[in-house]
Length: 309
Ligand SMILES: O=c1ccn([C@@H]2O[C@H](COP(=O)(O)O)[C@@H](O)[C@H]2O)c(=O)[nH]1
Image (cartoon, rainbow, N blue to C red; front, side, top):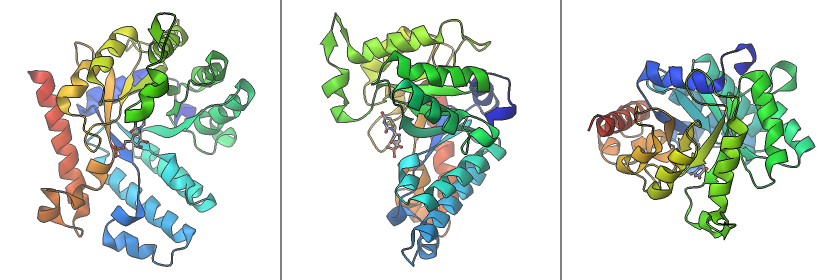
């Protein structure tokens, strides 16, 4: 975990992308009804702790499959929180397992609050040792409470060589209701991007990127291109690829001219590949790990080919 790391998160991510030749981020979003049958059986009793154990095993097996294929994973806290305390224990297991496997961990919990409470969230997810049950390398955060709510996260990033991804232009169809509102000649998401850039100032590492990254959806390719230009020193986490309709062509504009600066998340279409064509026919439920492996290789390849054109 980041506790013993002194290399900034942004530089570690750049290294990991270079080493793995992959910009894929595997989203760990376990859903009981989509798990392979063998794991659904583990949760047969319906008890939260049995389901949490199934989620933990599922995610850890995925980590085993993808650890040498991708730079990072993004466990989605919601699916674990849904199970209460047992789920949160499982989430911690997944964070630690991924980290021990050498993957960078992006906790997707979209946290934030007023400054003093934000500090507690930051220490919880990005802190180290006894102050942090989670110790992720980075965390998704909401900008909605303003600059003073983001600063505590940035301070913990400075101390722990961690990173954050601020929600700038989200992938969901309804995000525009607030994010696209224009005031003082700019949209809300453009203003958030400006804030991201301001917070990164004086924090740029050797890779050319700072600890304050941004979330911009693959489902808005034009805005993604504009956001790439607006935040030249931020890593962009691009969700919305695959199940939400985003394609390799759509994400291209999120990258810098040398192919760096962005990672593309795919959750359902990778981790439940055994349920969809062509992998369902080929591997079925019993060889679900092979389906994850091939789907991940395919995503890597599709993105590499796009860059080489
Ligand atoms: O704008 C956003 C921000 C976060 N997400 C999260 O990413 C994954 C997407 O899952 P898929 O199965 O690949 O659609 C999920 O955890 C979302 O909460 C997002 O989709 N859009």
